[in-house]
View 1 (cartoon, helix red, strand yellow):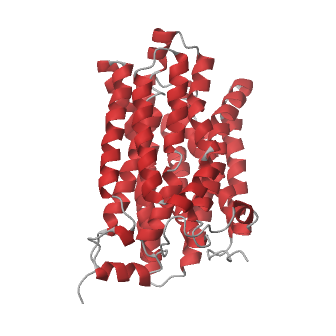
View 2 (cartoon, one colour):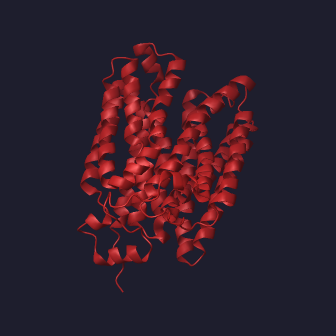
View 3 (tube, helix red, strand yellow):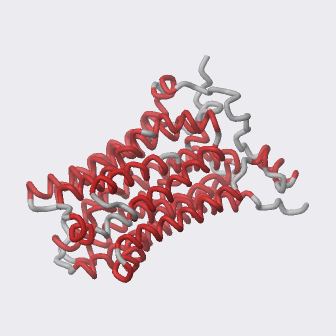
Length: 424
């Protein structure tokens, strides 16, 4: 018997590259605070609102984007959105004031809003159920890896060429990705080079059947929002994203303030947990889950265990709150984000496993809407708690409490990972 061709994997790597570019676009502002203050006199408070402006449009569009994806398909929405990424970065590079920067960040949120729901939908089309965790991990781990390398790379560009060229560089990278996506991405039914053997492999392995975009409306948002499984998945994933964004935005400051590490070393140390999370994302949440499923383990149970255990390991953030040395703090933070990293690709693979027909985009949009509310809340709540208590201990404890709620969502509401009944 001949081995099955592996054309589907180029789609997974294409989506992963897109997430990497996504996060380069997101972090370029975070390293530009001093330069923007010198150029436009932007205060710390204004800069904080500028950082949040991206998340605002990103969050508001999650539910509409899910509907649009199910209506028009991954290819059309993906092409349009990737073009907007580069336009937003070029717009920031050309800004002549604060208003222009806000407009560019709002546009970036619009352009990147479809990314994760679209990826979840594409993986459902392109991969059988026994390969879906690794395929998802490839794009999800890119978010962790980009956090490890994005700040230093963009920082070097800014230091050597100025903040405008750092934004322009991400604009060029984004436009190059748009051309790549335009040339490569097709749904399986449109890919003339997809072999009959691989097409049969996908169908027999449980890949989602395609329907022409717009041919079916799928389940309504109201119907999906009433489903226990959707509520449980959204709750668990929002808890994950709260801690993810807490560490993404506050980790360098925590190491600098609580551990008394200078800024240069705090940026270097910040990379350690993100590299570890990249590894657990790929090899535990991705490869190991699929390997166990292929060996005959109960697929639903394997995924439930990884979700619950990985999210529970996120509670390691409490250990960091009471650490007295950088090494101990980094150990507990690595445990926390490593466990969450293992759970994340499993969670992102679930919309395509539980959604009714032509509803993966909507389920993904609901999930990512909850994620982005948590992403907006985490930096703000952490800042208020740290300012009031002069410590990160209670801020980390708040994240741990939310993680416990998330574990409950996975265990008590999501339950067995099986399709939601079709609406009558």
